Image 1 (spheres, one colour):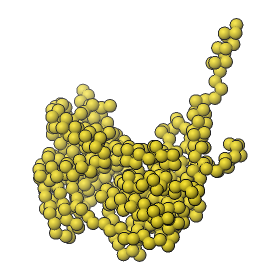
Image 2 (tube, helix red, strand yellow):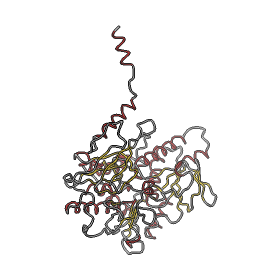
Image 3 (cartoon, one colour):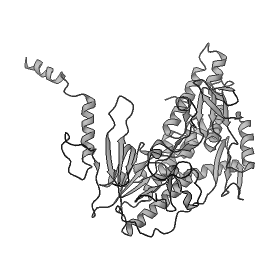
Image 4 (cartoon, one colour):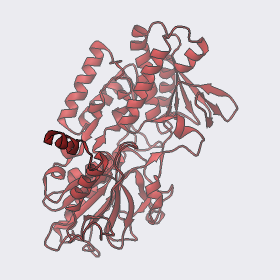
Length: 494
């Protein structure tokens, strides 16, 4: 009966799968510490990356993988620094083309650029790492960042906490969508800032189209399911409305003929749509969107319910899909930091993008803004601002290291050279049906070139195609545009 005893041994669980996986994760993180670790039972502090030694390369820790953080990592010299990135996502999102993925004009992979392609040393250099984690706190006195791993859902590992020592810290964690404290927005609306948001919008849109075709569904419910409401008349809201109207006129009318007369788009804005654009371009956008079937409503949302939203004038707007695009504000992480703040609650920086009250801490992108003492205005939360800041800071940090100030507290009295200067290159937005707006003025009051129509649409597509980070994704985008033009959009609900 030896075979029976062996069978009993094999069938008896010794540890749960979760416990085994957790032990493996703890073991994999423990080797990052440069100090001698005590036994697991005696260890009181989380493990992590310890301070660098004088003969080691200094370490730059980057919090975030948006436009600013990725442009910074791309420009940093891996021969001078060990680069460590901490972010809840392992890719950069090319946000100007994100709206196109919601309706199948582009595939999601086309707008996601892996960090390892932007800075190859992250995955190859011995002292450089990427950690899929959130930053929870910054200890500026000890030059440490406190982190917590990202978990997927509830039935997974418990978050693992660890610390990373830095020589230079760059906070580029971005911002979060503004809800203005309106009840129900987070529960019922979908934002448009990440790839998973675009995926959720696409699935919800296609689901509503298919549900509305079910026999016996009341006409009122059918109209509600197929009513797409966009709140926010900035470039993101207008571009999404234009893409959606294109999708309805070309694809829905051909492939969902039974319900084509029920689907509508409403764009709600409290003030003027595209307020930063030239007045002539704004009027062109209003005329074109209205002609494309987009209903424009001026109003302020007071409450959001599961099936309708309420405006301040008391009117109710039923919806089947609600997309919220009303700008951004500081994240809870930024609010929790004991650092000086600029107007609007962002992390305050000086002319060299340093946080002036602490050593070796910089901040760029949507989470940062000039302090009032600099006399400079807070820059808008735009991709071109973040990208320019990342490029400038990469060159500055390379210069600091070459001058011998790369390690912690090594650049106290160093001459940093020219401060950061921002020059606005203009704004662009597509409004659908091969039409776009191009405003090349440096400010709303300045004079400059402003174009609208097909030529602007061609400029818009050409400019963004060249701005896509890698040749791989440029090829993807070009092929997606071509296949959509020839065969129409992909309406598969995957």
